[in-house]
Image (tube, rainbow, N blue to C red):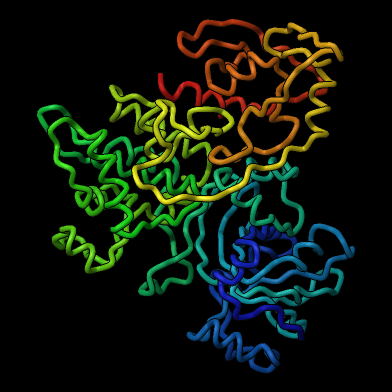
Length: 497
């Protein structure tokens, strides 16, 4: 019986590289998968019924499950030393997130609380399969939540577009990149929940966007107050910068206050404590430290050490580049139609959405500073491009622009540039792959990056300001362009229309 990292916290796992995904097929009826899932995950097993086989794992299991009911899942030993299953068993960590898969859907999520190997316990809990093997590589599970979400978009990104055949580990960086490919509920549940598996209230893309579109705002002679939507744009900027979703009142006051003064309605008072507390009514915002209904004056918030920001589920959705771009577009179109978009986004910390590459330069669009007034400095790095992909896309198109088809002759031959469709840097977080690249001339690269042109659904290249068709995008049979990346770029280009 071997113990691996039992008792390590989720925070410790994150410090070692971040939370990973463990994609776990539940199995079919033929191999007793649903029965096993119901027995040891949905219902849980009573540790007192298995005392004779717990062995050296007894103390840790009783610590993890103080109520005596353990939720466990296991895997049989891999048949090859370096297949996906073997890599997953070696690389999984306490704090990782398990996604259970069945019938082309994810059906439940859970957090790994402990990892150990115990053949005797596995045999008593689940028996043996037809090969006389048992599911001895065991994980102890917490925060189990059942849901149902289409798994195919995520699996397609991972190269398994039709079915998940085996246990698979997705790295922490890949998990962050792919969070928007599947809707997963949060696992943290109130302690008062006593049902075998908590059923999380659904907050998906539609619910989030509806909440942003229907904010309850006070009415002023000049129009609806902009305090709440300004605070939300600022909070989305924090998500895009990978900062904590909950901001202390002192930071909120210091950074949101100037935004209210600059972009709020003429004559309206600068009262950052108003959106800080009252955004609760949106259903996507929470406040820590001050109960709902309590006078949320600045002094009260300061004394309470209050924090506020998006609820965990909304923050998870907004970490996905596409949903984040949709939310920014919606807020601007709904509440800021007469405000200069470039200046607003730059000041809210969202200047990266003014270009497809995410590059804001050193100054905002108007020459002013990027980000909110007095925003704390952040550090980061730009992803390194795969130069082999750059050479490949240029060679496939003979260094001729896919937009205008005009060769740009230089002394050494022809010059072209490889352009990412969905930028690979923050905040767009696109992948560095051939399907996300175009071969462009410098002029059309600059226009494409600065969103002056976009590719429509029929593969025509159109001018953004008036929708006029300019060219048919030239394509190559060996260069399959990802439609999802084109759609993302089109979303950025049309956000100000």
